[in-house]
Length: 489
Image 1: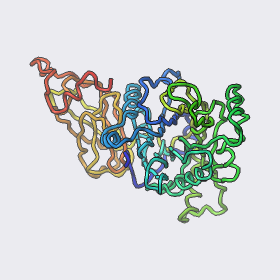
Image 2: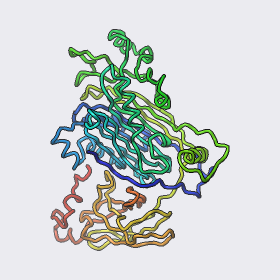
Image 3: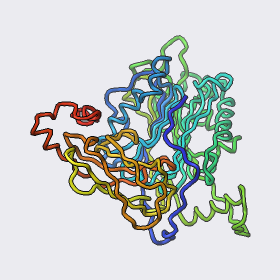
Image 4: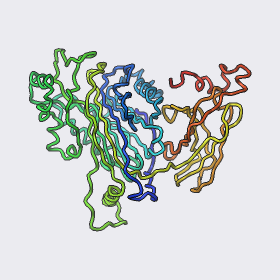
């Protein structure tokens, strides 16, 4: 069972008007979290986890959780409504103008992708999938969930895994990882497999342990912060020596204390009878697609993998992508789980493949519940439009695509590529009587993502409702939900 936000059948092509030299590389900040939450409910305060007080706010948040509580009753409700972790993260980030672009859940595995609102129209080709590696491949207690997308045309993939536990199963963990990498596929010509993506992040409770060293030595290294003395016996580091797939993934130095296993509500390592040895089970790695050697013959008629490699070489040269890890650490302040969360902050430097959204739209005239309102939109580039495309009215600070106040279907099922301005109307019955700061978003049914966002505008309080003393009444079916002062607060 899973929640999946968005699938599409093909990648958007780069804007051919943007050639090398016309645009400089730009930097984007990515904040990643992995945390095995051991079925605990979320903490009240996410400030430290998300670095909300940092002077540099991220452009993107990617949060991978493991062992989110999935008892029968809770999991049934979570498939219909957002789970408590998703709900709190959305409520925390939405007022800061982050939108949940995609999420996927497989039992206890949860992956959430958030973006600053300004980037949302440039995040396309969104797909999410999952792979079970638990008991007989049927039980979803172990495996991987992934979200893949294009960010300004660059193909990114985020893979959150929970692999087999226990010291003796290092080889099985690698086998599970390679199985996930080999079998997960996407409906996208440019990047049908994980390895085809320009940049892949692999993270989660990977469950690799520290071999050979005894408990006393490990504890001594932790107390003295001489973590480097333990690195050579970290199973993931050891397995990398013989596994080519692992060698393609990079990881920053483990300059933080092992994140497993702690007594609950403490910073004390396992004091139970089992006394499990501390380990860096929770990790964040990345893989920048290896540069293919240039071919002697750049044959445009090639098909299959060879054609893909030729395309990769041209793309790498025309639209460079670089990554720098700025932070890799654990967060000791949280103690609701027997794992500590791991945080990594990256800087992505890239040249955008497109600068303009697919659609421009705006609110025309004054908006209030006293009169029908008008939306103007026009396509800026060709895209596969549909009669199922719609334009949503959202309150500023909305949480996700589904968090609209109301929507209206677009006018035409075929939108010509020109500067024609098209009008659609929103009934006054659907507009909140209390008013709000709002934006309009054009949602493409075929691409399954938002492809245009208007400037923020004011929906005025209804004069008629105010004069007649009806502000607290249920003027229409949506009003009590929309007009509530507690909406998103």
